[in-house]
Every structure is written in C-alpha cells, then in structure tokens.
Image (cartoon, rainbow, N blue to C red):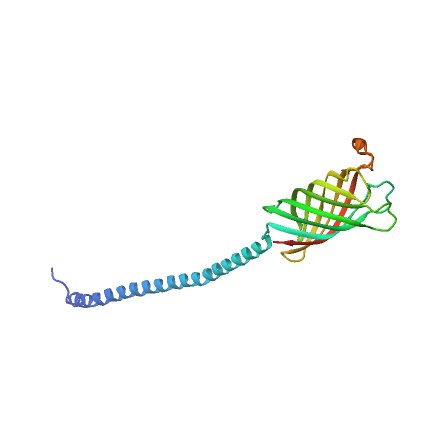
Length: 236
C-alpha cells in the first residue's frame, strides 16, 4: 500500500512541531506551579501579618490586665489602726454621759479574709461634765477578725473580742473585770496602704461598788457598754 505524498510530507511537520508543543506544555505547567506557589506564599504572609499582631496585642492586654489585677488584689499581712473612740458608761450608777478617748489596734492577717487582732483603748474624759465621780476606763482585747471586700473601695469586717477592763476613779472593787463582746465596721480605701475606718462593738463587763465585792455575782453593774471609733488604718 502506497502512502500519499501529502501525508508523508505532513508527518515531518507533525514530528517537527511535537517537541515545541511538548516544551510549551511543560512551560505552562511550570508557570502554573510558580503562580500557585506565589499565591500560597501571599496567603501565608497575609495570615501571619493578621494573626501575629493580634497575638502580640493579646499578650500585652493579658499582661496589662494581670498587672492591674495583681495591684488591685495585693494584700498586706499587717494593719495598724489609731483613732478617736467613745464608750457608754454603765459601770457607775446614774452616770449621765459616756467617756471619750483613743483606740489603737494591730491586726495580723492570714490570707485575704481571716486575721487576729490585738487592741487597747483608754477612755479618760467625760463627753460632758456632770458624771458622778471621775470615771475612767481602760481595756485590752484579743480576738479573730473576718474581713471582706463589699464594693469597690469599701471593705467590711466582723470580730469577736475577749480580754479585760479596768475602771478607775470610782473606788469599785474589783476594779478589773473580765470583758468581751462582738462588733464590726467599715473601711474606705484612700490608697492601697491607707484607709479610713468606722467601727462599733458591744462589750460586757462586771464591776461592783466599794464594799460589794462579795456580791460580784449579783452585781447591778454587770453591764453591756457600746463603743464606737473612727480613725485611720495603715496596711503594711
């Protein structure tokens, strides 16, 4: 069988064009791969440019919030208090006015909420003139304290106190009595270290007039005296 000459002439053309077409197809594949690789790198770069700043901002924000939280929640182990104090006076019959003086205390905290306090006061002056005799009261107390934040800069506390009282100026026998009671108060924080405090207690004690020591158990001077104090707290 004879092959037409035109067909024979066509084969060389086809054979000559095949390498070019092969090279063109390979070039297209390489260009497509390069384009896809460039596009992928652009996506990764954009993702990194978007995510990394957000992560850094998040770390800065977390650090700032943590620092602020640490400053806000920072607690001190000790606090010292000093202030003006008042007590009602029921140790003396027909006493008309209470006594005023000073109240001081030191508290040691074990954690944020629980502490142990030691306090003393000296009531040496009548609120007004007219009290019979010249009554004076000194006391020393110890006891547990529960402390908690109420709202913002306002804190509250409750305490139980046990100790003793000394009454002078009235010839009472005995002039020292076991005493105790309970109370609490509010604090407003001016700074992390300084606060203003207002507190109140109800303290029980038992005293007898001169010559009535044998009747101490039935003494009419077994009374409860309310106390109030306003002053400054230093935390350290």
